[in-house]
Amino acid sequence: MIVLSDRVGKVKPSATLAVTAKANELKAQGIQIVPMGSGEPDFDTPENIQQAGINAIKNGQTRYTAVDGTPELKNAIIDKFKRENDLDYTNTEVMVSSGGKQVFYNLCQAVLNKGDEVIIPAPYWVSYPDMVILADATPVVVETGLEQDFKITPEQLENSITDRTKLFVINSPSNPTGAVYSQAELQALANVLKNHPHVLIITDDIYEHIRWGADDFINIVMADTTLKDRSIILNGVSKGYAMTGWRIGYGAGPETIIKAMKKIQGQSTSNPCSIAQAAALEALNGDQSIITTMVNAFERRHAFIVNALNNIDGVECPRSQGAFYSFPRVEGLIKRLGLKDDIEFSTYCLEKLNIALVPGSAFGAPGYVRFSFATSMDNIKLAVEKLALI
Image (cartoon, rainbow, N blue to C red; front, side):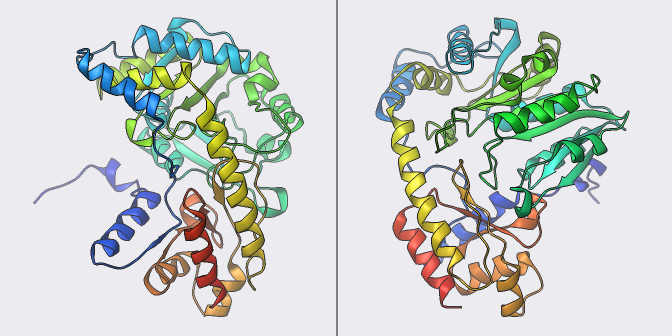
């Protein structure tokens, strides 16, 4: 008899990956699936970035690199933070990982102990709580909702902090909601955190470049730089440069923490792919026009899907300011169909309507579903037409 670890029994499979796998299984059977579940741009990686990867192969850049990334890529990341965020980091304060997910995983393994608490506003990206659990710590989920634009309030944050709180997680623009914190909102949260110096902060900025509206990007460290010495910034090239499969993320933070994260990475994956690092270097330093092209497309799709969903009885869909998701409340539709919850609704959509969605429960928000509009307008229109016929 094979006995698995207690650890693996505590975590759930990724719901977003599960939906994609189920949709692919149905597609393999010849069933046309409308893909509204995938969290990746439907654009190809730009030609100049592709070519950088090809050149890396031809030039023999196929060997191990330093565990925490090549010097060239780390310097490009340092330059990026200075250029775009007006933040100064040194070579020992940044590291490269195999995707943004590994940055978060490394951090949890490096700083969390049994009994530590991690404050995670919900709706949250599906992997945050499970990676906390894998580090033997306790996720403290703080529910937000449509009425407060899916953003944690200073009062909620204050009431959630205890002497066991080790880490606060903030994600803006948000997966799954597309919500974006304003400078004033970030400063208000920062004011709370300044009264609790034992709390570390991680700001997940992976959707930094995918925003619309007049406001420039800002994260909590930029809003209040006094928090910089206990904050980790997570970012990467996956979303902004259509490079999800290249698996390059990066982190920046205090040297002590980055050094510990490097140690964890050195005993797990070791260095990220050398070829992907060369491509990421071109992404950060090269032509940035892909960002504008994608953002313009996502903004048009967002406007259409929000208006269309709000015309369906039983659906409430808020406008978002970034990422490529809409996160409507569908409780009225669930009730009208006689279904139990958002999980049954998502199953209904996949099996009866052939629409791939992710249930809100996977993000800590029952009664909602996540629509990804990182797909063609034809797919978006087809999905909405099918839902409107229910």
